[in-house]
Length: 183
View 1 (cartoon, helix red, strand yellow):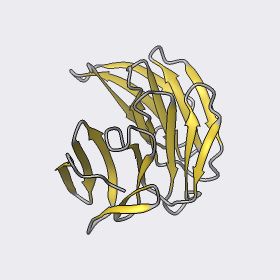
View 2 (cartoon, one colour):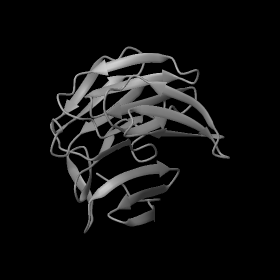
View 3 (cartoon, one colour):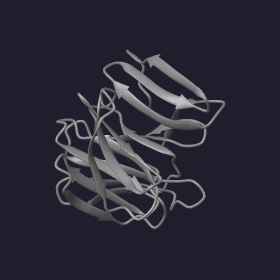
View 4 (cartoon, helix red, strand yellow):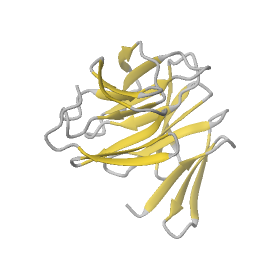
């Protein structure tokens, strides 16, 4: 990609060029925007906020979905590898302690997991993107089973091909997971 997306405490979502030029600003959230992500095809953006919503945007800045259902602030959001689903996590002291899977097209809630989490992502290559992977204070969890533990809080993570990258406390990690299955 040639663009970067950011969310901010000023309640906005912004798209930037790699040179740092602001290309677009989207308004609609009414509280801190914690997490943003591009869709796999690069044509949509998903964001989440302390305002308890998940929103889907076009690259022109049009709000396509205002997804409601969380009863606490939403800390993390991601598209599935096929772009058809969105996973959101509401944890922390003001969260509802759930992870929810939504239809990216309709905003309909497809699944709910009673699990406190600070970060969510689909496990692209691990289980064909079918199940979300969750991160709570010190663990990565898939299908209710702890797959890895850490000495500090897991704040964010992502998958690319056969690698897992993330931030734990103040440390960034990169793990080759080829042949390893987080269960």
